[in-house]
Image 1 (cartoon, rainbow, N blue to C red):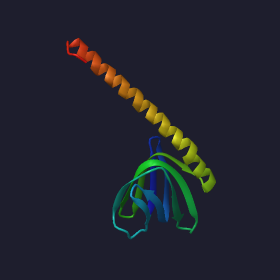
Image 2: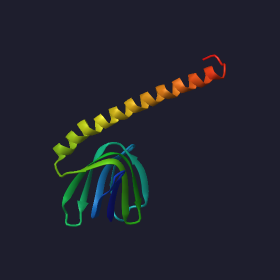
Image 3: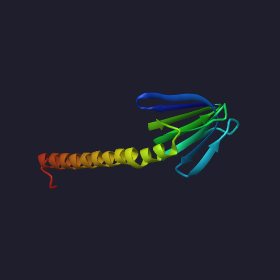
Image 4: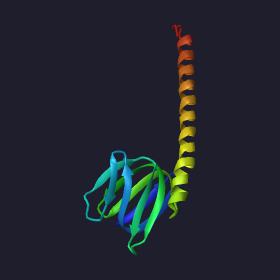
Length: 130
């Protein structure tokens, strides 16, 4: 199988692998080359994959979509960190990814306030009570 990992900045990785273990929104999965095609959303998690030389590698991913089609597994993620140290990757999920999520929530809150203010302003201009 070929594992391709994409992020907003481009291709993060493309490797030939034997299997991949990951967490989806509805549980944990292992994909092997002869498994059926598959699509799922992924929460922030540590992906484990085994290359054709029987070495195990790890990658921390921050939200994404995984698609297995034929002999290709494609992952589109917000952020990916490649590192074979589980401690480093666990720390990245607990700090970097959580900080990114908090910043996203702050931006969403600010956007909701702007939208509400704009709606009130338009209603006032139209002579409607707000």
